[in-house]
Image (tube, rainbow, N blue to C red; front, side, top):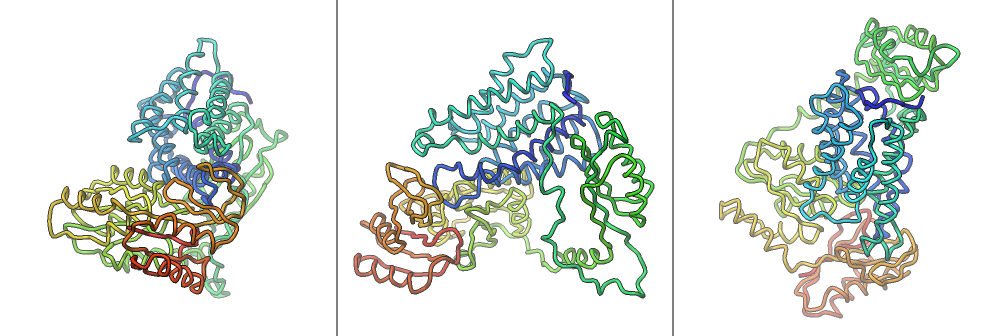
Length: 554
């Protein structure tokens, strides 16, 4: 059914977001591959999807059906699950949209468009130095130009068609606004992710909702169920966790007009923990019940099953009890004046930061950006009046700041360390004795100056960056966003990187990762010692996955 309406209610809003999230999910890999640097990133597409998925999960649990309630639940979920710069900006876009929709049961087309403008303003304000040619530009230009075309006769299908068209035009133009995109021959990855979300919106408006591919599959990530927990002598106590995907059939119901509330009302007579929503012609449903056969019998009146999963909750209960008991084993730390939270990936790096004085090391980094909620959990754990944060990755800074803005139980100070080297340098000089928050912050920032961090990894595509020709599979070395070396031989590439960053330096820390042997690392240590006899060289096993080597020089 094409929506020839001029209003968006809570049900349609939910439908748009479900379809948009599913469309992005199907394009995650494509978005990831659009990053300017040809490194194993796995960030932009994954970060945006995890962000919007967190919002959608919260939204479908919201029982109130106004567009205000649905948008607010979505925004709350996205803020907590935001990760990476692209995810944070996306969460702010929808947070601003929710603010613009506040107090509305339904939103007219004009009101919704105005709320989208609020989203753009909010997203721009979340970035200290907004850069054009990014997701921000794509959102802003699409809203501005599509809003100019709104007229009294326009329906939702016409508006979203214009909106999507303007987004694609803006996205295609991003290389003209950012030289790095043009040199690498790619469009902006964040902007592309946003376009895919809106493509999902438009599909829903046209009655062709995109359905999540993972929604129809059984979750195989859970641990194997222990059947010994339910024997011939057991009594059923917890019932069955029943999940299904139901394809509505035109031969049984009016698919377009069918209300999922019909199923929800019936499920309320059989059990609890009910989640049910309609995406196009498909119903996704979850319930805890003692009589799953009644659920199946009732729902089959309206369609046929795409998938069914029924599990004895006695087996699940034993696992969940174990999970719930784990947090109780943690002893809450005594309240103190200062604490420090940082981010690292790899057992060796995590241990190194703890030895330097970090109170909590969040497991994360390249390809594994932590969410706002991960930071908030860390803040709770350290339990201090003043919490300093070292993100150690430029793509994590915004997430840390967003978490800091949400958290109210402590004063959180984010020190914008953008790589492991800056975080190491700041931590190595950790000193709270001055007993002044601002002075400690200034000292952290000062200690990060003059540090150079080089990283070596494998190129995932053929391209040109900073004038350097790179072939897929080359070992590439860079510092921050400056590409320095590319070579098919790892040993040659790391030696060239050492030469690029070790001029006039006093010390060099060689941190080798999971993809490098100790023997290879020792060869680099010997090379640095012989080539630069005045530099103190330290070798450590970081255990990090993405980077074969991380070099820290000062």
